[in-house]
Length: 185
Image (cartoon, rainbow, N blue to C red; front, side, top):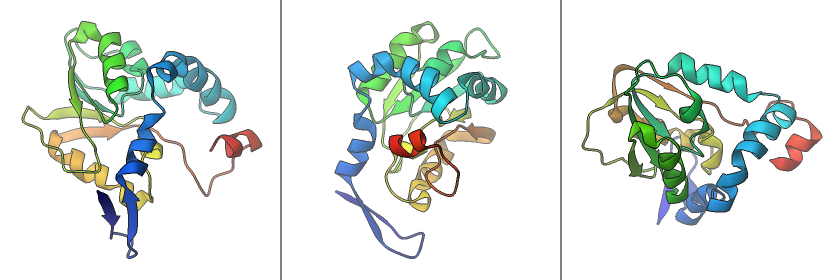
């Protein structure tokens, strides 16, 4: 199966294998060390974006009716301050390891889990959300930003009017990077 990009005026093919590869790094083993390696070391020293700033961003935009897409380890959901003690939390990811890891980590919220590919229309028969987090999602999706933007088109129907979509990602071009950041990319 191939997804084809037409938005930029040029046709660019992204294979199902490339989409799978973008999320495959999140194995059970990787998820165990992810918080320390990415949120502890890489964010501060390589990307110059300390994790506490991202956590504050989460707290600023989070609602009591939240969908998290590209869930990673659930670090921010575990630490953030929901505006209620009993939020509705849903998790959406293509990677079943990340879904299971995060669902276990935030089990106290009884999260819904949905294994979906945001590059495809999302079948979803449930109430919509007031906030959607897409933290560190876009850089895991192959292709140009125009191609990746399909994710926004597919998430919009899951959002209530006036809902907020927020997150962060690693930029690939047009920004200064240290030598270590260039090697990691």
